[in-house]
Every structure is written in structure tokens, then in C-alpha cells.
Amino acid sequence: MIAKMSSTPGKQRKSGANDAGGPAPRRLVVAIGGNATHPENIRGTTEEQEQVAARAARSLAPLLMQDNRIVLTHGNGPVVGKILLRQYYAREQVPPMRLDVCVAHSQGGIAHLLMQGLEDELHRDEYERRVACVITRVEVDPEDPGFKNPSKPIGPFFSEAEARNLEQQLGWTMMEDAGRGWRYVVASPRPRRILDLELIGALSDQGIAVIAGGGGGIPVVQRPDGSHAGVAAVIDKDLTSALLANQLGIDTLMLLTAVSQVAVDFGKPGQRWLDTVSASEMAAYMKEGHFAKGSMAPKIDAALRFLAGGGKRAIIAHLDEALPAYEGKAGTQIVAG
Ligand code: ADP
Ligand code: MG
Image 1 (cartoon, rainbow, N blue to C red):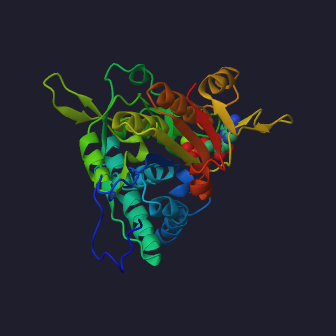
Image 2 (image 1 turned 135 degrees about the horizontal axis):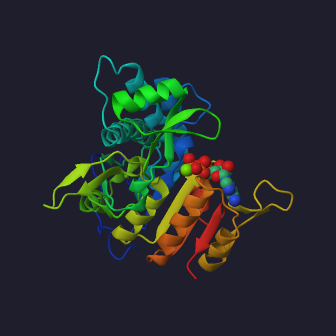
């Protein structure tokens, strides 16, 4: 049954309200990459970002209209980079925010555009589904090895003199990045626990499409007294998506990105695209070094962790092919085993 606005005005079906014996709604976590929020080739005007969100919405709406329960996660790399750049230029006038606060800002801004894009797209088809954003905190281990050796460069490039200045003025750790200039480097600890899990699950159970865990989540650590504090770190959004799916007991994880499938010998003469692969086969490819660090490797890592943690199917596919990928007609399907 599809909730058409014309027939059920203002109504949203509830979990389990699948009338008499209908199949339970299918649940999935869908992660969308940087291309779906802020591709590198745009200047980043608000209008451009709206168009990018609308494009993501066009691909995702058919999945929602199948009445699936979807938790949507997203990357925030370029957006948080621009927040840092603004802080840099305004640092004499406005005190800069710590990185966890920047991530929270990016979650709100990106989700606003995605919510609007999705609701508009659904509305066009007279399908009613509310979309909500949960500003999501993710607990990391203060002893995570990532903290001892911050190594993830984020945001804009600076000259060495500017970098030294930033170290003094803002306390940023700066590092030279592959001959391209100096960048702010932060720890990238593993996600350990999604603090806002129950809230996300409860909204999803009501049939609300939930945007959560944006940018990998706001990194927080637990203090000895049990309270939490934000920290300057960046959590990998693919790993957070996998953890979110596992902790919600969702058995399908879809990672949508800028490439149609996963390849072995990617970009080399013998390149081969993968259709359906078992987790053990994928782990062997990973060991052989087929997946680039910082791009495809974290996705494979996340997919394998998800399957090891009880997931049944992880899909890596192009953002424009959300529905065919979910139906097994596109993308790379990684299955337990
Ligand atoms: P996202 O923003 O969606 O996380 P990334 O750029 O981090 O996207 O990762 C996806 C990219 O990984 C692809 O666009 C592709 O260029 C690259 N990539 C690296 N190795 C592979 C591989 N073996 N197969 C497919 N794509 C790969
Ligand atoms: Mg990525």
C-alpha cells in the first residue's frame, strides 16, 4: 500500500501497521557520499547545493516510495572544509568553533537541503513521507590509537607560514600533505557507540525517513563520571553507517558513491568490475590491496564489518542507481559468507 496524499491526507502509517498480514516494511541504511552533498566541481553556492540535493533526492525517492524504512547517512568533507575556511578568515572577529561543533553545523545544513529535496520530490508524486534529521553524536574511545597520531587532513591548504600561525592562534595540528601544502590534521577514531540510536530507531519505526550520523557523527568521548564531551576528530562516515545498521538490527547497508561498482585492478589494464561477491572473497581482495586508502578501502572495511556484525547484504553503487542497486540489478553486492 502506498500512502497517497489524496487518499490519506496528513497520515503517516506506523510501524507494524501494515494492514492484515502484509509483509513487514524492509529496513535499510543508505549512506551517500560527498558527491551527493557537495561535489568538488561546484563553487558551493546555496543554489548549487540545492540542485545537488535535488539530484540525490530524485534517486532516493523511488526507494522511499516502496514504503521502505530508510535511515540516510551522508558525508560532509567539502562542507566542513568550507566551515574551517570561514573560521580561518574570520578568526580575528569571531572565535572559531571546535571541530565537533563544526560537524554538528554541517549535519544541520546538509540535512536541511536533503530534507527539502526529498520532501519536494515525494510531494511531486503525491507521496507523503516526512523526513527528519537527528543531530547524531557518536562515542569514540579516548584511548583510540588515532588520537595519539592525528593523521587525517581536512579543509583547505595553507602555506607553511600560515600553518605555523594557525598552530599558535587556533591550536590546530598542521601537517604537510603530499607536496600540495599544509593542512589541519585530526584524529580519525573508530566509531564505538551511536548515542542517539534509540531516537533514530523510534522515528524510523514510525515510517519517518531519518537523516542521521552525518559526516560520520559528532565525535564525543565519555568522561569518567559518565558524561560526554565533544572532541576535535573526524569519524569515517562509512564505518558509522555500518555501526548504525548493526546497532539498529538492519540487515541491508547501501553505500552510494561516485562509481557504479567496485573493481579489482581499478584503473589498471586488467580492471574487472564486481557484481556479487562473498565477504571472504572481498576480504581477500582487500588484502591484495585493490582498494584505495581513504576512498574505497573504508567502504569495503565498513561493508565487511557490517556483515561480520550480523548484516546480510552490503551494496556499493552509484548514487544515481539507488533503486536498481537495491533490487540487485546494479552496483556490487557483498553477501555474508
Ligand atoms: P564518497 O564521497 O562516496 O565516500 P570516495 O571518493 O571516498 O567517495 O570513494 C569512492 C571512490 O573510490 C570512487 O569514486 C573511485 O574513484 C575510488 N576507488 C578507489 N579504488 C576503487 C576500486 N577498487 N573500485 C572502485 N572505485 C575505487
Ligand atoms: Mg569517502
